[in-house]
Length: 209
Ligand code: ADP
Ligand code: MG
Image (cartoon, rainbow, N blue to C red; front, side, top):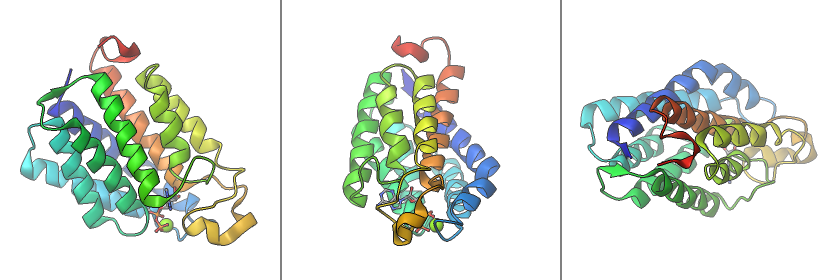
């Protein structure tokens, strides 16, 4: 079972990954965007950690809902509302329980990803964060590590795609040949979850819980 501390560690690991990769995320957002994805997420996740420190939510669902609200209020552009929705909807699906199972988390993440698709009107193949989130969350049924792998592969696979949603879509065919920044940051988010789950103990990986 996973408690609020586990989810706080996930957000902390995600913030560290965003900080480490912020320059690369912004570089990816420069040929097919406006070169702000790394700085957007860095601002957002820094605020998430501050909010979690200030409010210390006691339930997994509350941790993710606070994180999602904070991203919506601190990150502008497309990715703030989309990532905010992902975490809020996932947190809402987890409810108020003080501990959640891996199966519950997987189901909640499905709901979160579905909400992102609904809000942004995108589907896999459109060269967005969904190209990492959808295969990543699907692979959670295998293991947390497999989810990180599938999300990373999904992000790499956006390079030959033509963008059909978001700012990159304005470029038409010229969006081809560049990896999508949002898919890349989504892979960071799922890899952070995998790292925290694996370090949480043997029960974590392989669906044993
Ligand atoms: P902005 O495009 O407003 O500058 P960011 O640079 O922070 O916002 O985020 C860009 C990322 O947002 C893209 O790489 C893409 O993955 C994601 N994105 C944009 N529009 C959508 C959408 N409609 N659905 C899903 N993801 C989207
Ligand atoms: Mg941008």
